[in-house]
Length: 144
Image (cartoon, rainbow, N blue to C red):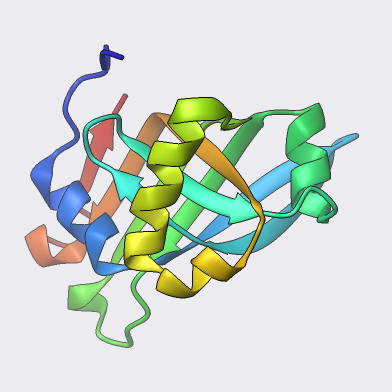
């Protein structure tokens, strides 16, 4: 499997690796919904892996509409340290070898996940905007 995407800026990758929960936005019939998900990030493919049960609202919505958005934020009262990632992309259920590889990566980060039998999902980013005030107030890095 090859990666046709351009490399993600190292500063964005570092930020993503510092965190482990993203907010996932889905929608159905023009009604939005958000869910918080533990994630691992695959730097080779610029994608997130999450696990979630098919009975959840966000999974039901993303099955119907695989176009999703998400965000990761650093909570701080210090405006000069503010950092946050907003992204959009597509999500798909993993099967076979791809699922096994992603699950191994996920379990390394979250060992307790070995006890679950949930589904592994892959979010392939198509756009990302990283706001990083440590580089200057309102500084944004864009990736497509």
